[in-house]
Amino acid sequence: MTELTIDVVSDVVCPWCFIGKHHLDRALHLWHAEQPQSHVAVRWHPFFLNPDTPEAGEPYRPFLEKKFGGPEKLAEIWQRVSAAGQTAGIDFAFEKIEVRANTLNAHRLIHHAQTVGADGTAVNRLIEGLFAAQFIEGRNLGDRAVLAAVAGECGMDRAAVQSYLDTTEDADEVRAAATEMQRMGISGVPFFIFNKRLAASGAQPPEALLKAMREAAQESAAAA
Image 1 (cartoon, rainbow, N blue to C red):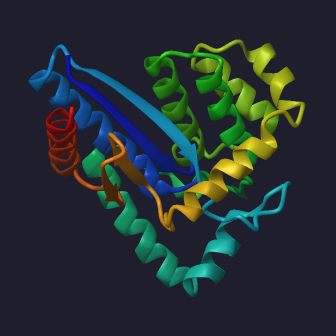
Image 2 (tube, rainbow, N blue to C red; image 1 turned 180 degrees about the vertical axis):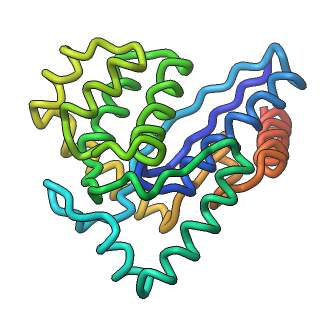
């Protein structure tokens, strides 16, 4: 049986990471059509796109206008991202987003889901739910109650998640993991690592990700 591990470094407030996730989902669909007996493990790792975000967040659009050089520049960027999103099956609704969220607790939630042994389908549903909450529904992913609600909508125990998020459990571990990603030289997301052998940076198209998956599997088989 072919074994494939995919490590994904991303942040849930990164629109290109949402696009990259959809491209990965498509690549995995194609992979399983080619390799129906294979086993694929996807592991998500934290990255802080805006590490200086206040804990309570701050107004979204003013921050981006300042970052990118004004409303016209921001409109151009949103148009480009929206066009890429359409191709990936995502209808971005940037106008609904009011808060630039601090994503520490969102990363804690993802870490928790993976640590407690949620299967790959459940984790994928949670990741999709978090991205959709941010970019399609405009919900504040820095709000612990919102995170618990999203988790509940994705099949997790909402009350248990709320209790977990109301602590600081795993916060230091998540910060350390994000620091480790930077130490590895990862400075932009999404970032994909296949079988710890091949890497792909950015929202690569599904075909490019599939090619990397094939090559990584072949290299692993040759080294076995």
